[in-house]
Image (cartoon, rainbow, N blue to C red; front, side):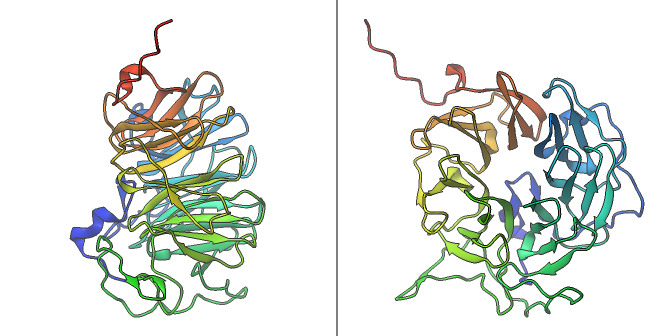
Length: 376
C-alpha cells in the first residue's frame, strides 16, 4: 500500500467532508451510536430509500430514518458503532448495508431499525467509502487505497480482493500487499509516448487508487467505480473482472450515476462532470457553467432532468445533461448526497445535516443572472 504524506491528506477525502484518516481511533467494542436531538443537523454523507422509508448515514455512527418523505427524522434504534458512516445501500425495503471508517460494515434486516456488525470496526488505517449490492447476496464495499471486500452470501463472510485482480477462491486469503511507494496524488500525470496516459497508481498486485463510489451501469452486467486520478473502473461481467479506464482528467472523481438513456456521469473536483455514452469506454468533459468546487454526486428526476450537489453549497441543474445552471445555497455548506422527497422538492445532505432544496433553480440562488424573456 502506498504511503501518503500528511500534507496531502486533504486530497484524498470523500468530497472534502470526511477525510480518509491518517490514523484511526480504535472503536471501543460493543459501543452503540448515541442518541441526539440535533442529529438531523449533524454531518450526513449518504442517503437511500428502503421501500417508502428514507435512510441517511453520517458521523458518529448516526443513522436517520424518515417515514414521511423527509418531513421528520428519527435515529435508528440500535447501531453498533460510533465511527463515521460514509455510504448506505438497500436491496429491498428491509435489507441493507452501511459502511464507513475503520472498514466497518453493518447490516440491517428490519428496514434500518436495528443493525449488526459484519466486518471491520476495530483499529484500522483505512476507510470504506461506498457499498453496492447487485442482488440480495452479492455485494462489494470499496474505499481508500483500492481496499475492496466482497461477499456472495449476503455479508455472512467478506473476502478482501484487489479490484483489478480476480476474486480469490473461497477460503483463501488476499494476496500480500506490494511494497510501499511514495506518490503525490496532486502531481500532474504525464503521457507516455505511444502508450497513452501514464498510470502512476498501478501496482504489481492490483491497483492503489482510492475507490470513492460504486454504482450501477445501464444494464445488469455493468458496474462502475469512480476513483482518483481521473480513473473510472468498469466491469462488464457483473463484477467478476474489472477494467481501469483513464478518462484524461488528472483529478479525483467522487461519485457517479447512470441516466435513463444509458449515459454515465462521473462527478469530480473543481466542478468537473464527465460523461460517457458508450458504457464507460470513452469519456468527455461537460461545461458546468462556472462550477469550480468538488461535485459529490447527482440524481435524475422523473422528467429526465439531472441535479448535482457539492462543496460550497453548489447545486447544478441541467434539463438534458448538456446545459447547466449553477446555483449556491445561502449557507455555502458542503453537500454530499441528494434525494427526491417524493413530492415537490429535493433533500440535500452534508455539513448542515438534511435540508430542503427546490426541484428547479430559484432565480435568487443563481450565480449568473437568468436571461430576460424577450418582450411580447
